[in-house]
Every structure is written in C-alpha cells, then in structure tokens.
Length: 164
Image (tube, rainbow, N blue to C red; front, side, top):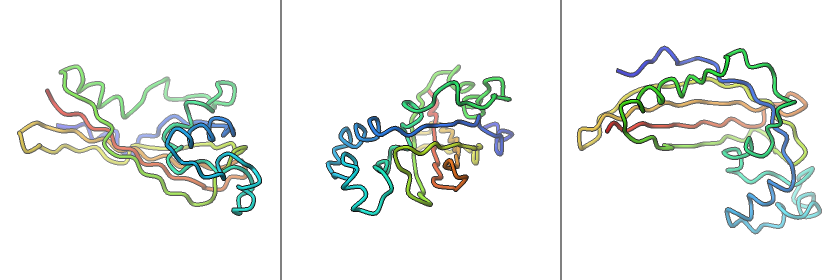
C-alpha cells in the first residue's frame, strides 16, 4: 500500500538564476534553432524582454542555476517526500521511471530572471499493470515566481516505481 501521508508535504524551496548561456545551449541540445534563443535582438523583435527559456527548460534549469548561497534554509533537514516513497520501494528492487512532466507558463520566463520555487506532493497512488506488476505513482508540483513575485511557471512531475 502506498504511503499517502506525504500528499501535501512541502518540497524544499529553491532559488534559480536563469542565465543566457545554459538556456541557449539547452535550445541547441533539443534541436530548436529559433534565433530567439541565441540572439537578444531576435528575442526583442519577438516581444521578449530578453532571451526566453525554451519550453521544456524547466526540467533542467536547477542543474545550472541553483547557486548554494542563494538558497533559503531548508527546514526539511534534507528530507524529500517524493524520495521517502520511491526510496522505500527501491529497497525491494524494481525500476524507477520518469513518468510525466508538464509545464504551464503563466508569463514569459527569460534569461536574467531569478525564480523562487515552492512545491508539494500532490498525488501518490498505485496501479497494477497488465502483467500484474504493482506500479506506484508520485506526483509533485512546483510553482515558480520571478524576482517581482509574479507566478510565471507551474511544473508538474510524476515519478513511478514498477515493482520487481
């Protein structure tokens, strides 16, 4: 039985600085050759204040812009409610998969923005696959606000564990 007590549990907050180089390189890596991701003039001509981040960059931006000195104190003592479930299941083997990722953009997000996140676990449930394997799904949702406090992005991610 999946531990649903983590639903509503907050995730550690993060502050992320969006830099032009990593955002532009991400666009290249996902084969998006639009000049708005490389040239500030093209971005301005398209109506952006600066180079916009590519649509799926929210999946990876913490890897390049989460500087330790900008982070709030983590009151969770490093506990991660998603990993509380998934880590516990992995003790018995199985496979962890990235099940789904989704983004809702509420406003443009551009290089130079500093985003602050707050999030929580929104779902934890089980399903049985067609071959009888139990699969556990854990979904988390993060809201990102820019340096002006405006909600600019909501990111939703589902991890799943398939029993051995």
